[in-house]
Length: 86
Image (cartoon, rainbow, N blue to C red; front, side, top):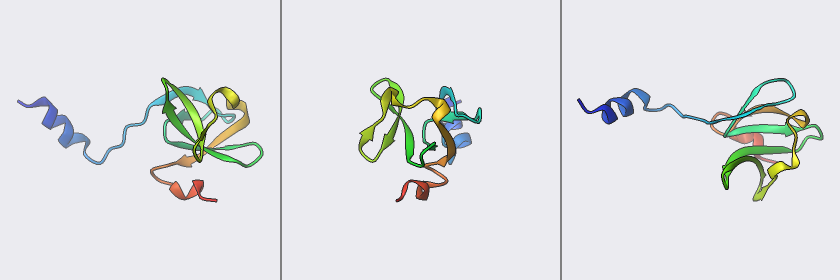
């Protein structure tokens, strides 16, 4: 039995996202690919870069400049990519 092909067949069309270990200000779990909105309205994408999770606005990375108490999850890049458009 080919385990790899069986797994691929059963998971076709499913997107796996990594949990960051953090929750937003509403206690919603934050995952890679989530789109979040800061208290002052700016939005960022949660990405994994250089060995850690961070936010990305355009081509700029936020790194440790944002606390979970300063944002909420409003969607994700797979279902709501339009949320990142200005």
